[in-house]
Length: 240
Image (tube, rainbow, N blue to C red; front, side, top):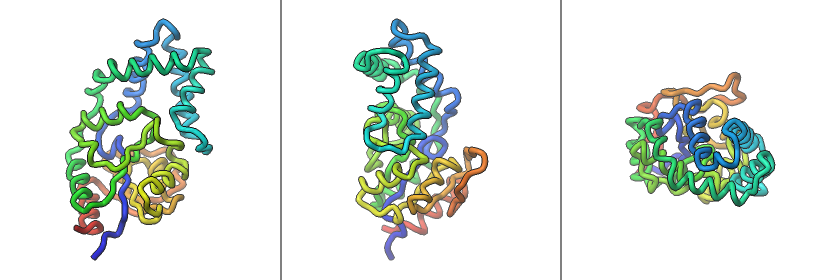
């Protein structure tokens, strides 16, 4: 018997770890601001960062990386030299992200889920919305006790050209994994951003342990349940 899927995509926040983004993002911006407070006021930076993230989420044009798009936007919005902004951001990543560790909590079943996929030799992508840099995404995994070596692909600000809920985001992952989108399982807790994988032809599992609903979603999950039920589903659909 062969596996039902050729690749599995896991969302991160609310799926493989717990984090409250409403408090995490202001702390993230504050950490960045501590490295550039001589250049820009906190309120201006926070507004620009939030607007920049919304720009990434809404843009369907994949002609450049999210990193390129975001820093060009920030430099224009804040009337600052882009190279200087990038330099200060690199300083923040090198010295200022560890205080964010207490915002992240593990999910007990996450390690089991990834381990089962590894045993089944199924490629796994960490399909977190790529609005954060790779270093911070890897740090969040580490804080939650997850081994980034489990992921064949990790989508980040630097390596992605789209964001969820854009169809290009899911197609780009499938292409990089060398599989057809229709042979992928997308696992996530967001009724809009994660279930939009349906538009790319992916099968979806809505993890409802820490459900995130965005009003009336255009998508319906193919499967739904908590982390234990998801583990049972993988046992039935991945073989080794």
